[in-house]
Length: 312
Image (cartoon, rainbow, N blue to C red; front, top):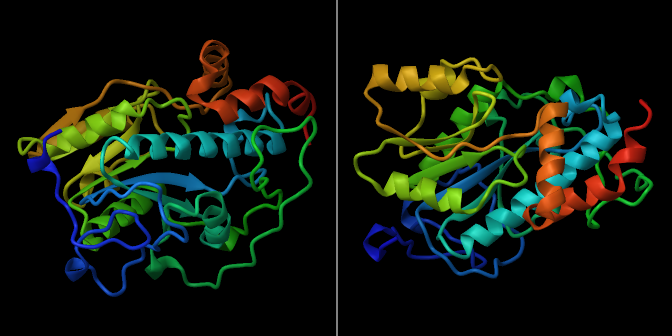
């Protein structure tokens, strides 16, 4: 990547990348990190991790069975640890601002503890947040046998129904648009269901967006969806007119792009973990390459068998 392609900011807070302060709206929903980043990149790029609080009964529910609800939430907590570590590693090579786009609204403190060096944005737009957030539930006792790396444990209380955010398409539209409004010129969002996603794909996404002939970039998933969306303007119909969580998500998205004259680049395919078959694939991959997702690998090696042996 050449220097001429790197849009630099004029200032930074806490050592993390920031756009020029003169371009920032006063009511931006993005929250700065609570601790400085070890990196000193300044960039007009942002990478958003779409994440939810690992609450039993509300995280990776399609993995129940073979897992219990508590085990599924613990596994997803490990996914988050590995994905955030991958984002940090990628940011050492390619300048971008790391952001967690979180849900539910009450999860801000959880994610601040989990990643104090990341920016935060609530996936739920302020216009839809009509009720005050409930107090965040306290962490439960650690499951046995011991889980992978020490970190705040998943909350085992169900999410209050009144606090459910809008559908995924609306949340994507909101957070991508908010980041662009904040002053970033290239914004990518990734899922949190692909713990072994190679960091090189992040740099490839931003290289695609550097190309003036490209308007958007997608990372296809094996199940027909996508693990990454990158844009230089609000996605609009690319997300709002697509029925998410179906086998035709990417196909439908590309059809809309063709209708709108939006030029799209595609990254190499990867997979997310939503089913027992996906979990088998992940287990096999990490048996040979545990370094690709250390927290998840440790969980699968020590905790999965006994935690999935009975249902709650």
